[in-house]
Length: 350
Image (cartoon, rainbow, N blue to C red; front, side):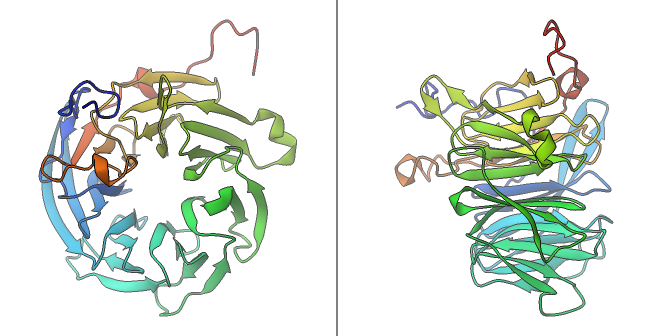
């Protein structure tokens, strides 16, 4: 039986010859994030775990060493680092957020609670606040010195995606709502728009210059959207993560921290690098044998981490627990893959 457009059920999970992270999770990965200060990678997963590895880079070779892990009571869905690289926050189906002071060797403590699973989380250093988004249809701001939220913001629907580049914050919910906040006035919606994509929102990424955001949907498409009404003519959408008539979800959008190009990762098992300004794909990588549910760059963009595992997008009947394996891979992007270049021969088209 063909799986995900491949000819073999044992399709190659690593056609791009990326470095495999040792001792990966025992179930599918839900989020990946690098420390902003060092090559320390965190993965959350459906086996209730938050795991951490040190990544050693020597020239073009990478080695990974498992460092530590903590447990939640239920599957973990999201993670983020404090800006000083000392602390990890993780949230999930147990409706709580744990703060794990990794560098000091401290024990995790619960710092935030919701009435339903916590789907998204962000640390905002400019405000010294944690922001959490949940399926309970609220966004909550937390001052870690206080047990109760500093503010509870009602959302029109369940939170599916969240991205922050202070002062810009963008929240994607069910029913294709996208809510824009100016964090200088965090208790008021700045703008609410309907997603430019016709299907369910899967992921968001704020532009590095805070002028807009990317949105990815379950229907193999990305929208490039500017916030200023005067810039709407610059908006566009494009198709990706499709194979013939098969259409796959766009699961992750990651801006390169230096070049401000971006990566997309999808349920077709592919990750691609794009330049929104010249409207072109810089590099299409070979498709892995399973979906890529999440991905991220390290702090200087020299390492791209991505997980390869079943994402349940084809239901339980396509899950074989005896053969299911979860991988996390590290790719070293070449400059030609991630550095933007002007489009040739477009007659000055912008």
